[in-house]
Amino acid sequence: MAEGIACFASINEALGKIPYAKLLGIQAIERHGQPQFYLPFAEHNIGNVLLPAIHGGVIGGFLENAAVLHLMWAQESSGIPRIVDFSIDYLRSARALDLHARCEIVRQGKRVANVLMTAWQDDETQPVATARAHFLLS
Image 1 (cartoon, rainbow, N blue to C red):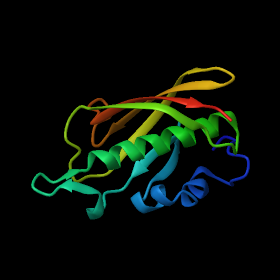
Image 2: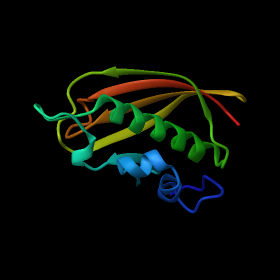
Image 3: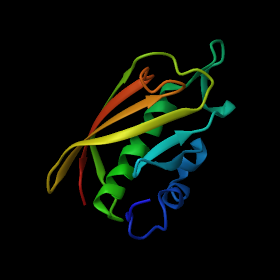
Image 4: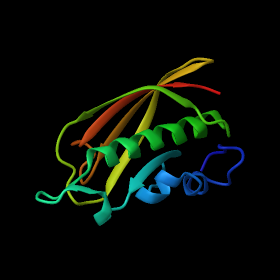
């Protein structure tokens, strides 16, 4: 994994220090030299038990945490970016399966960054949600 998040040995160690990320079970893996985020299926993340489907708030929290950690990794910073706004589009039901996410920094200035996040399950070409966020950099 690339150098990054100066005060943590790895993104997974940083994830272990974020209570909500720890509750959800978010993990990070390296893929093509970049972090990719992973949310293993857990019963407590189900929102609609009739489908069953992962709760939309869980998906949103997963993507927001992924974006924050991706920015910290990219900046090689221990400072936590603060969210200015967050917008999510739910494209299809997230079934009772593992969830994956990747982030892309669309634009980064000295003070603000714009990040695009995509979440999928079985097939990366069929996302279950996409999100956009603006962050105030520290």
